[in-house]
Image (tube, rainbow, N blue to C red; front, side, top):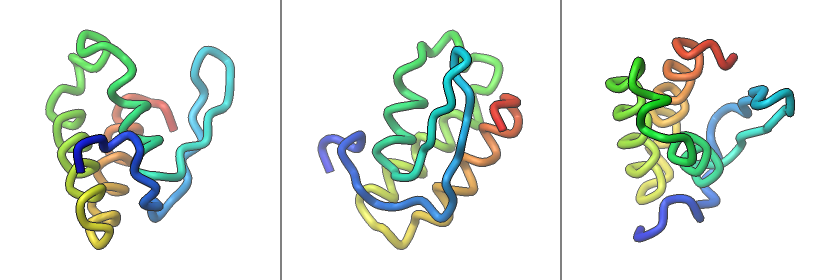
Length: 85
């Protein structure tokens, strides 16, 4: 898939994170990919490995929906470590 951020593949969980005081629900691979790539690399620097893992897992899940469990788990690990959940 050329544009992962347009993927409608559902994650296995809905993540509700607060960003700038506003609650954001992340339900699809595309939404998650857009969220973690919209922030600059510097903002994710502390979590570089987890960010890379989540990004790769989301890209794979956009190609193959059977990988959405792995993408959900990678995203959860990133969000927990970054204290977004």
